[in-house]
Structures are given as structure tokens and as C-alpha cells.
Length: 236
Ligand code: ADP
Ligand code: MG
Image 1: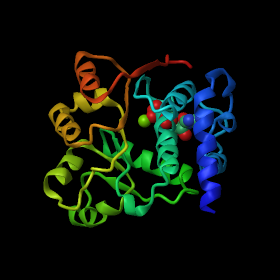
Image 2 (image 1 turned 30 degrees about the vertical axis):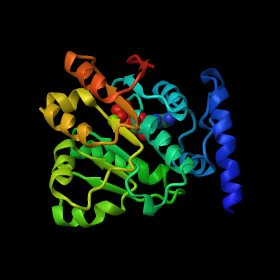
Image 3 (image 1 turned 180 degrees about the vertical axis):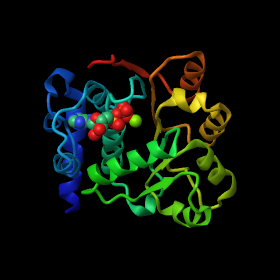
């Protein structure tokens, strides 16, 4: 019932305030919606990695996050779980359009993230889209206004922003910049700046990067507000 859902959401909001990272050994210790808990369980994710624990707790509290983390540290769930929870708590529906945007440097990474989202988000009722080069632009174009969560590569996204009248990000609540250093290394700095300039100012942003170069810091300054820094080392 909608009353039941409202109560569940209110309870989660209360719990966000008191959570302590040391109490969160397993995903079941986190204040998460039962839909997400079931998705994680079905995919056999039991305990969070370090970057997941820290990022999820801060992100649930509405903070912007700058995560320094290597490949393999588990960044995907670190941002997908907060995305699912934020949309759930906002009772997001198909009618609300785009709620979360994940930008990642390559098609392969986008596809991997999309697959994890499909698994972990399967008990939620959100629509997700993959916007990457090499697919039929017309097909993508028509479906874009129906996506609640978009996983994309920078060039393709900007192309939609510029050319597609159905692309509307005015409602968007969360931006994730995955592997930001690689995006910049691949020459996407201008593209990323242009994308960010098109997004609503009032949003939550998570930026992940293995290295902290000057250009990453510039991008962080442009995209994040008062971020919390999370650093995770190689062998954690
Ligand atoms: P990154 O994006 O930081 O390179 P991924 O999110 O792709 O890392 O995760 C790396 C690997 O670790 C994947 O195979 C993923 O399934 C696995 N993994 C991630 N989080 C967990 C977890 N909490 N428990 C077990 N395995 C995990
Ligand atoms: Mg990754």
C-alpha cells in the first residue's frame, strides 16, 4: 500500500542519520529498501567492499562523494545502490523521466554497469537505458524519454543532449562520473564540461577516479559541492 511505502521511506530516512560505518559489516546491516536487499541477495552480494561501505553511507545522507579507488574495488555497487535508494525514496515512476545519469568512459564499462543494474535493481520498477556509441541512434532517441536511469558514454550522451528534443534532464537527481580520469585521458574533458553545464544544479554527484590529477581536480571542482573524500587502497 502507499501508506506502507511512505512509512518504510520515512523509517529509512530516520536511520540514515544514525548509521555508523563500523556497524555495517554486511549489506543487511544497511538501511536499504527491501527491493534492493532482495536484489543484492539474489545476486549473492553479501558484504560490501570498503569503497561501497563508505560511499553508500555518505551518499544515503545526501552528500557529494569524491572516491579515489582502483579498478576492482567495487565502484559499481557503490554508486548503483545509492541511485536505487534515492529513486525509491522519491517514489520515482516512469512518468518522472530521467532520475540518475551514470557516465563511464567506454561501451564495455557501460554495458557491465548496465548488467549489474539489471541484476541488483530487478525488484524495483525503474526503467534503465544504455546510451553508447555503435547502436542505432534513432532507436535510442525514441526511448530516451522513458528512462529513469541512463548509463552512457560521454560523446554519445552529449550528442543526445544537443540533437534530441526528447532528452530531458530537468528532473535529474543524481550524477555519477565513473572512472573520471580515464574519461579525461580519452579526451572527453570538453564533452564532460558541456554535459555538466546542461544538468540541473541541484543534484547529488559522485565522482570516482583511480588517480587525482590536476584535470580530475578541475572536473571535481566543477561538478561536486562540498564533497566527502573517500580513499581506498589497492589491496583492501
Ligand atoms: P570497479 O568498478 O571498481 O572496477 P566492480 O564494481 O566492477 O569494480 O567490481 C569488481 C568485481 O568485484 C566484480 O566482479 C564484482 O562482481 C565484484 N564485487 C563487487 N562488489 C562485491 C561485493 N560486495 N561482494 C562480492 N563481490 C563484489
Ligand atoms: Mg567500474
